[in-house]
Image (cartoon, rainbow, N blue to C red; front, side):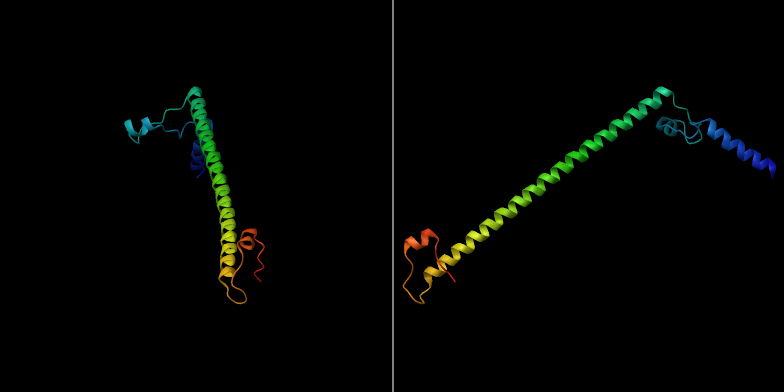
Length: 124
C-alpha cells in the first residue's frame, strides 16, 4: 500500500515538475499517432501561442464591439421609425376628422375652405 502511495506521489511530483507533460501539438497527434510522447513547447513557442491567443481575443472583442454598435444603430432606427409612424398616424387621424366634419350634414352645408386650411375646426 505504501509503495502505491509513493508511486502515486511520484507521478504527481513528475507532473508538477514538467508543465509540458500534457501538451500535444496537432502534428504529434496526427503524424505520430496517439502513442507518441508529446514534445514540450519551447519558451518562444509558448510566447507565440499566447500572442496568437491574445490577438484572437482582441479580434473577437473588436467584432463584439462592432456588433454592439450595429445593434445600437438599429435600435435608433427603430425608434425613429416609431416616431415617424406616430406622426403619420396623428396627421391621418386629423385629416380623417376634417374630412368627416366636411361631410357632416347635421347643421350646416359644410365648412369653408378657409376653416379647413386654418386647422381651427372644432370637431367635438
